[in-house]
Image (cartoon, rainbow, N blue to C red; front, side, top):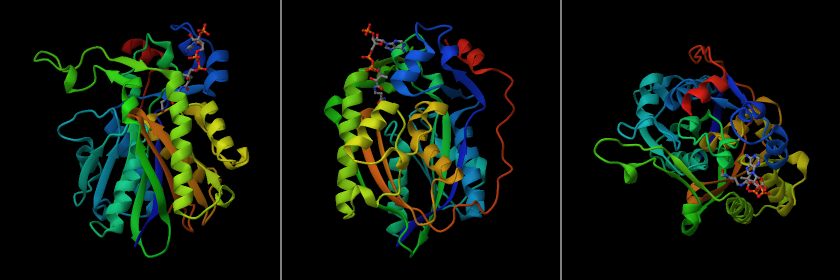
Length: 350
Ligand code: UT7
């Protein structure tokens, strides 16, 4: 049994925050951000993360040509859930009307979307469910320390979702390698976000980011290289067998170093970091959806998807795309209208 990916959808909030916008309140510049990270702009959400996830999920469901009652499992990957109890997946179930779905949240920071893909694929392969929607979504802007240029320039908001269904054809995730550098967990942490920081009067303090950029950079390259090599070995494949690398997009220089180590040519790597920055759990899934929408993914292609995030978690998935690269239908679901600019919203958050 396999878990074919038969639907895909994304939801990017419309408000854009450019590098020049950031330079209006931080000691930074478009030149620094572009040359050090490859990022030009990112999105700022005017809605909660479950709503971004819901719209992406509705689009994935339509793309698969399925109805809400067909969904047997929702796995919602994020670091920025609206609430911890009830969970975020239950809100997506309610908004979709997917009343037959089991619902779980999953947090492995930036790799949450990819770990969710493993969980749902494994539950389909083992026969627990026959279908699933997985979602990677974040509203990082609300937990961002907007006074800290080390991190404020790097992240953005967004969501993407995939519909998976049981199949006897060898497609979907064929192999993966997951891991975690737990001993280094403190070099990327959101201090203030979680029960450790709670007192009786207030659950959340001001969130401070601990972020040792250069160490994370090195560990991201080593972790994704290791996971990718293990995945290729497990599948008995060579780098040249891969049609397209669709990596987590945290820094263009991380991607360049990784793909050089893997001996993958640049024209086999999908990049969209300039448009969205790092959307954590949403990043790799938005990249996959856009690679399909923009025609980079062809029927039967083999994709390698390395990812890295807080924890420090790491993953690399080998995905075989199916025969269909066009959606069965389009969803009519849209986000509510937004009247504010990205800069106006960020100024209200700082
Ligand atoms: O999803 C996983 C999580 N994230 C990552 O994987 C990110 C990993 N790390 C990185 O991508 C990079 O380390 C950064 C983009 C965070 C930083 O790039 P870097 O080339 O490692 O820069 P640096 O930390 O060595 O800083 C170079 C200079 C410093 O100034 P001095 O000491 O040379 O005078 C910094 O103070 O750049 C300065 N700097 C900035 N300047 C303008 C740091 N941040 C900024 C900024 N704007 N935003």
